[in-house]
Amino acid sequence: IIGMLWGLLQFLVIARIPVKSEPVDEGSSLVSGANDEATTRRLIEIYEAIYEGAESFLKAEYTVCAWFILVFAAVIFVLVSWGTGWDFARGLFT
Image (cartoon, rainbow, N blue to C red; front, side, top):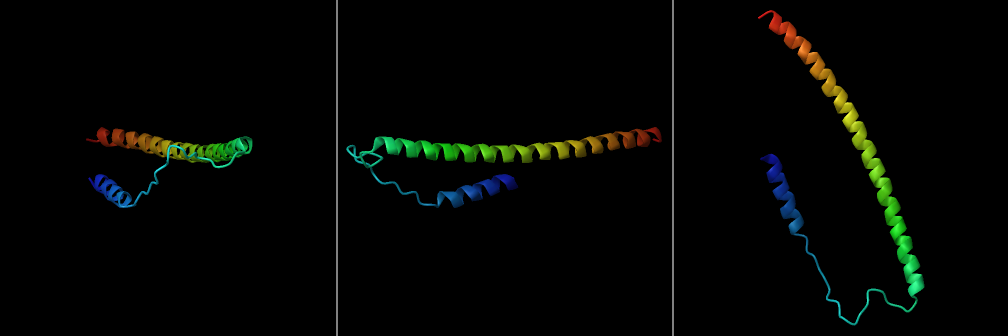
C-alpha cells in the first residue's frame, strides 16, 4: 500500500510539469541549411556518442546488478543453510 501511495505521489508530481510543444508547418524541415552531407555526418556523430554512452551505462548497470545478485545469493544461502540445521536441532528436542 505504501508503494502504491508513493507511486501515486510521484505521478502527481511529474504530471504537474508543463509540456510545451510548438506546431510545425508542413513546409518547414527539421534541419535548416543546404549541406545535407555535413548534417548527416553530424547526426551520425551524435548517434555514435549516444550509443557509446548507452553501452557504457548498461555495462556499469549490469555489473552492479551482478554483484548485488551474488552477494544476496550468498546471504540467502548462508541463512537458509544455517536455519535448516537449527530447525532440525529444535525439532529433535520437541
